[in-house]
Amino acid sequence: MENEILLKAIEKLLDEKLKPIYQELNSINSKVDSIESTQQTILNFISEIDKEFYKVEETYKFMNDLNKVLNQ
Image 1 (cartoon, rainbow, N blue to C red):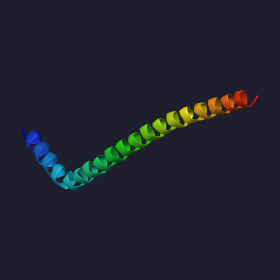
Image 2: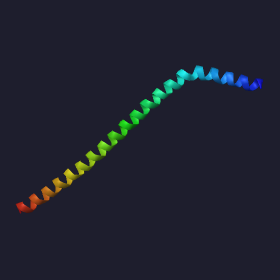
Image 3: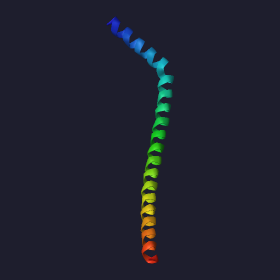
Image 4: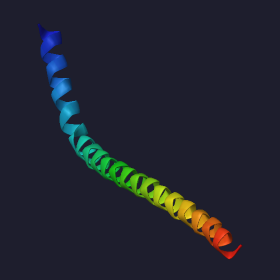
């Protein structure tokens, strides 16, 4: 019984002492989540740009080929 009371008291003390650290970790986790979200947005944007550049490149090739045929 005494051990349980002692353990509860130690647990309470540790929780109180670690509370600022837990709060800081929560803040850091929130910032990491925000960074990961931003990274994903950037990757999606780059992927879309890559697709559009590919379309432009294909159109440019087609126009060059068409121009060659018309100039013959």
